[in-house]
Image 1 (cartoon, helix red, strand yellow):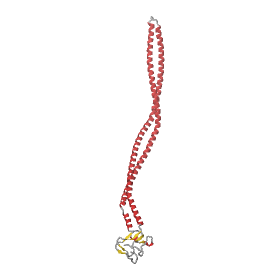
Image 2 (cartoon, one colour):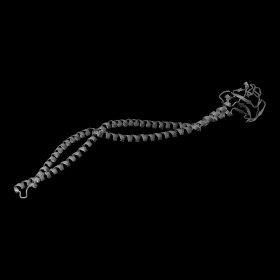
Image 3 (tube, helix red, strand yellow):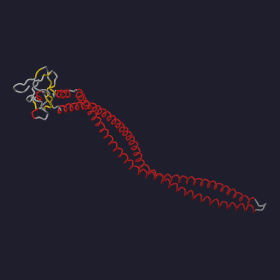
Image 4 (cartoon, helix red, strand yellow):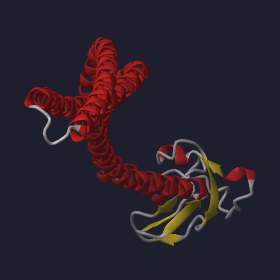
Length: 327
């Protein structure tokens, strides 16, 4: 039985200065505790299990509560860590989806860059070819214009010649009409020959006029097409000269975006690596948390310490007062 200061056989209250005992130290309380009540006096008969002394167990009860709270917290930590592990999986899935989006974007941007580069090459080639084509068209227009002028002068001359031939034919036909019926052949035959020549000439002149008129029409149509082509070439040259800087800028923009996208892939991969490392740390922490959750030693120790705050008799006996007044 532990030694208890019975204060000369009298029950003492928890507020009495004499109720401090060394028993808590013997009971592994860690420090002296106040006696809250002494349930026996000297000479009382006690049986095993009878309460002899009660210590103030408020601090010990708080210790039990704290130990239970720590144990409960340890149990909740397993769920918290599991949730954190699930979060790493979710975030890694999000990063994988983001990586796919970035990769798809890089593929599209790369294709767009290839198309723009092809167009830029075509534009640069056109910038060299179109001026040469324009020069040829200008030369052809100049030549056709000259040909048209010549054809127009020839047509005017043919029309004048036809007018003269028609006038001469009219005069010959008038002379033939004026001849008497008995005019000799020597007079009539030259007039008839002149009439036929003039008629043939007029027929040829009409044919020439017709051909030249058609030729002028074709020349005019060709000139109209060439002038329209010249206008298109000039417009094309302007568009090409404006388009080359735009295409070049667009390619630079794509290159900048591709560089950013590739940097993004590097960051995503680093993020995935960190998530895997964090998940490995969490799994190690979970192992320790499971061990802590399954270990209720601290609660048991705190409960045992609190149970020792009540001192009971271990056998049937009479309480006697030793000379040192401690039992």
